Length: 287
Image 1 (tube, rainbow, N blue to C red):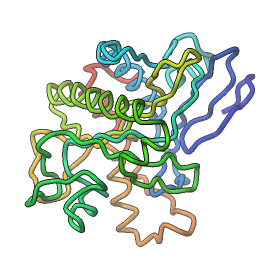
Image 2 (cartoon, helix red, strand yellow; image 1 turned 60 degrees about the vertical axis):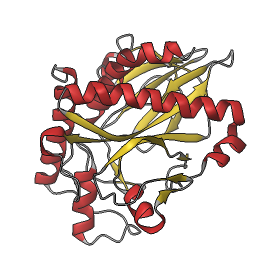
Image 3 (cartoon, helix red, strand yellow; image 1 turned 45 degrees about the horizontal axis):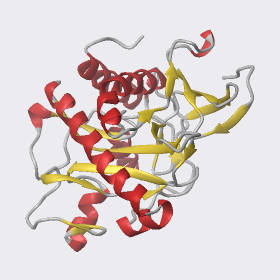
Image 4 (spheres, rainbow, N blue to C red; image 1 turned 120 degrees about the vertical axis):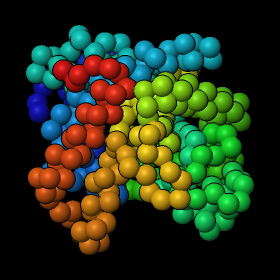
């Protein structure tokens, strides 16, 4: 897509445009990425789901942010060019912090791999006897680096966060991340969805205030499981892009060469999962 605005950056999924002093326009495409590669096959309506679900979550989480003296970056999802309506957000320009703030309430994915090897996730010790899909005794903060396109996010310990942003800010990030996750998990569970884990990104406003940015609590940045079928001990059914990751693994792709095209049935099933997550959480259709 092309807009009559200066392009600031192009990510795996989004284009970011200069929308004036202290403002950016974030436009979500239908591209999908996995294992740090952008796949050649888009998922119809995915960009709308990411944008509209983020907008909904910003509203739900505003009280939590306010209680910490923080805010979010959304200015408007309606005051955007007509050509990108439904998939664009006008946001405040921020100085983004160089860490991804990951919260986990359940053991899954790379967390399971590390736990099975060390009994912990970096410097966060976990009790013995957990399995894939187990609920953790309490949510944990397991941050990672923020990689550039084509590079890998790497899990880091809390000391690395302190080194990156300073001890007071690191403590604030951990506390706010866990508070946001806990509230979002409650909301999701009321809708019949388990929020297994998610990542948040934060930045600083021009006056130094902490601001929640990027997308929030979407199927791209979270693991959503149907609560009715949750059964620890195996990989859970999901309403997120784990379905695509699983297909890529079964396809024999080496994660190094250019990724394969997705079959039509995988595209349709992935789109259905994204739409289901949106509609079940918000109670309304994607527009």
